[in-house]
Amino acid sequence: MSVHVFFSFSSGLSSPLSVPAGTKDSCIAHVTGVEQKLCIPRVQYKDNPPHWDTLFKWDIKAIDDALLCETVIEHNQWVQSLYEAFGKWSKTPVADGEELTPADAQEFWFGLELLEVPLEKWTQDYYRNRMEHLYEVMRGRDSEGVSFDTKALTVRQAAEVIILFSEYLDSGDIRLDVPAGYDELAASSDGGYEWCDRCGKAIHPDDIARCHRRKCPLKEDF
Image 1 (cartoon, one colour):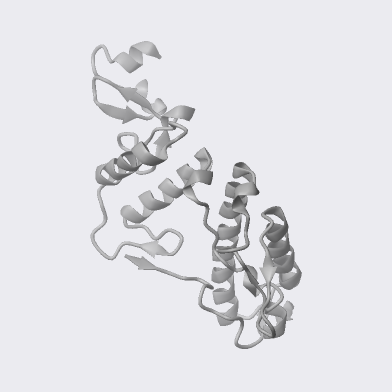
Image 2 (tube, helix red, strand yellow; image 1 turned 90 degrees about the horizontal axis):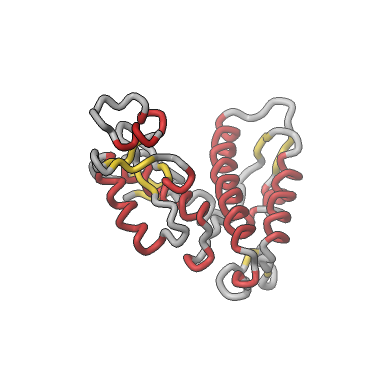
């Protein structure tokens, strides 16, 4: 399995970068907002650049679970999209934009860290987000910089792995599975699929009316 590290081992920009106007202020605002929402301590040792102390001084237990999970998902997506944008701007400088210098980048670079939520703080939405990420990887599609180096699992194999994980992780009992004929996870808790006892499969609601089986129990119910 291959894992892309994004900004994890970088200390900043090596040279000025031409970016869209407002990029610096937008990045500073995002990092500051996440820091304040999640009460992440910013520390600095002597003349070294500042950094977030998410290992020792961050009291993550005091933060509301829903706020924590929602903010972490949004922040991590932002970091990954910014990484892609920087790569694009380094190859194609933005005309009529602004210059982002290495000194400018230091004002927010410490916030380009991917955050994690401990299992005991997971919400149902966060659990689903993490399982959808794993499902994509197992199906051979790059997700969040993670990809398989070996042959991808089949739809059913990947779904069975998720179901296996659910015994330990699905505290909200949302019951993720892949409806027959599809290639993405759905939850039974929100009507994403119905379980057919006769077929022994998860069935998408749109497919129930088209079932040709005689005395289909789902069709009769609907």
